[in-house]
View: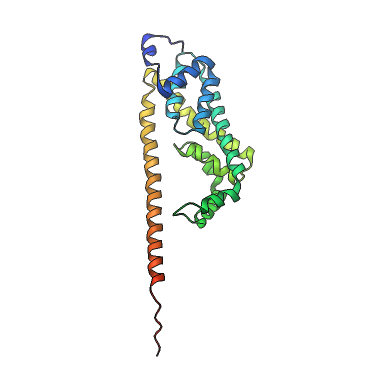
Length: 228
């Protein structure tokens, strides 16, 4: 980046994901930030809470314009989400059910309920899901499986992504050489979401195992009919 002062130069990352993203912006400008976010959608371990504030920091230093930062990162989000959407669409409903039936501790009825829920709330799920860590990428797959109309999916994804990206890019823009504070706070939120998901999965598995245990016990007991 063409950094404007020594303090800003000291804040420029040199390694890891942040250094990689900074190099992309250095070489490609706004499209580099868009490419980084597209890859973040496809590979969720790449953290948007690093890439987006760093892009805002670059805009604050004049390396790219703020409008360019928001445009390209939002376009990158839409492109990455569209790839996942088409993966879900190619997998399709029948293959999804076949794969689900092979998984332990789950029932086909669970998938049916999820499918019914998505039919009722799919638009809200896609829009709001773009603003929730972890689910930002995952929500695109069921949208493809359920064959949500592509124009609707792309519109909702673009709107939700614009809101999320704007918050993080502007935070990096305003924080300047303290842009990395965003990663700390959003990282806490991501961990909280992940912990809630893990707890829900564990609780569901425990309920399933207990239910199966009671079912086996019931099958093992002979039924005694008492005559009068």
